[in-house]
Length: 120
Image 1 (cartoon, rainbow, N blue to C red):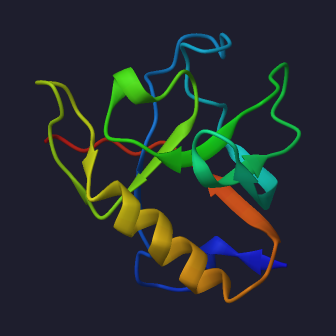
Image 2: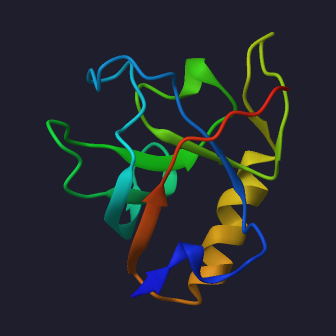
């Protein structure tokens, strides 16, 4: 099992929707520590399935650049940058590839979610 926080250097950056009371499809997930598994999604390619999110199902970390790509999921990227004139991430495919490379073939791990605010 891989702990994504294991390194002092960022592996990738991520974007989530704003906090909207943990509502399905429109809110980020609560801060906390979550188990995840790596899987191939039929539409989104390789994803991290986030388990045991309170009152939520189907939360993934996947490629995408901003709010219009999220539906309550976590988006990976290489850097923060505006997308469609809103906060987001760029080089998402590379960000997810870096996470999977860091996983080194492992299929599950631990993800730590905490608040962070970046102006882009």
